[in-house]
Length: 450
Image (tube, rainbow, N blue to C red; front, side, top):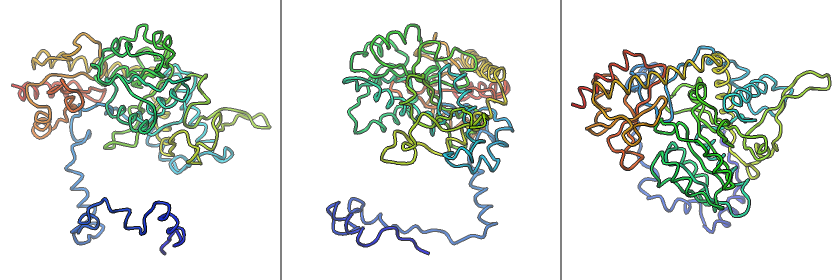
C-alpha cells in the first residue's frame, strides 16, 4: 500500500513558500538527460544465482583477511577477540534502541556506564559520553563545544595540519555557514611553534593529534600552559591503543580528548561503522554533546543506571539538538567496552608494545635492506605504529605492484593530502603483522623500488 504523507494542499503551501509553481521546478538545476537515465539493468537472478554472483564480486576485493595489510591512516587492522562479536550479537543489545526508559534498558545503560568509566580511565578525563559516529564527528563536536564555551569574540580555532585530513574536512563542514574560522592548516605538519604563534584573544581552542596523522608524537611540553594562558581550550585527538602504553592527554593538560574507537574491537568493514570517543573535564559537562549515563539508586536503595546531565530535547527534537546522536554508536561503544574488558589493562599495554616494536622493526628493515628514507621531514621525531617512507616511484604504482604481485596491501599516499609529501607512503604496522609478513613487505619493496 502506498503511503503519501503530504496532502495536495500541503504541497501547494510548500511550493508557494519556495516560490515555485510545480514540483518539477525543484529539479531544474539537474540536466534533463540525467534525471531518469536508462539503467540498462540485467535480467533478474534467482537467489542462488545472485548469491554466487555477489560472492564472485566480493572475491575481487583485497581485504585484510586475504592480503597482508599495512594500510592505516585512521582505520587499523587490529585483533578482535571472539567475545566482542558474541556480546554485540545478543538480541537484547543488537536490537536495543535509545534507552530513555531506564526500567526497560538497564542492561544497555550499565554497559554504556562501564564504557564511559573505562574511557575516563584510559584518557584521564573526568567524564565521557556514549558516544559519536566516529573520530571525525567527535572532533567536530568538540570544536563546536569549545566555540560555545568561548567568551566574547572568540570565534577562531587553531587546527593542526597534522590532524587526520578527513577529520579536518568534517570540522570545516560542521562550521560551514557559521562565524567561526579555522587557522593553522597552512603550516608544516609537526610544527607546533607555528601553531602557538597564532594564539590570540580571538582563539577558542587549539587542536592537535598526538600521535599525529604521520604517526609521530608531538612535542607537548608546556603546550597546555601556553594555550590556557591565551584563554583557549586544548583539544587532543588520541590513538586509544597508544593510550595503553604512553601518557594520557590529561597528564599534559588536555581539556577535551577525542579518538576513533575503531581499534578497540571494531573490524575494518570496508569503512564502517565506527565509534567516536569523546571525553572531557567535569567543568564542561553541561555543554558536552551526546548521551551521558549515570549511576544512581532506586527507592529501595538498589543500584541503577539512567541518562543524566543532558536535556532529552537534544536527542529527540531536531530543532533543539546540540549534536548528532545515533543508535549505532551505542552498539559500537558496547564493542569497545567488551574489547577493553577482555584484554584488560595489561593486554592493552601488550597490544601497544607490539605495535610500537613491530613498526620500529619494519622501519629499521626498510631503511637498512631497502635503503629507503624514513620520516624524511622529521627523522628524529619518535613515532608509534605508523611511519612514512620516501619512494623513488609514485605510491599508487608501488601499491598496485604490491597488491597484484605480492598479495600485500600497501600504505597510504601522503601526497594526496600534503603538498611536498609526494612519493611518501604512510605505513601502519599493528600486532596483526607478523615478522614474516614485515620481511615480505621489505623484500617486495627492495625489488619494486630498484
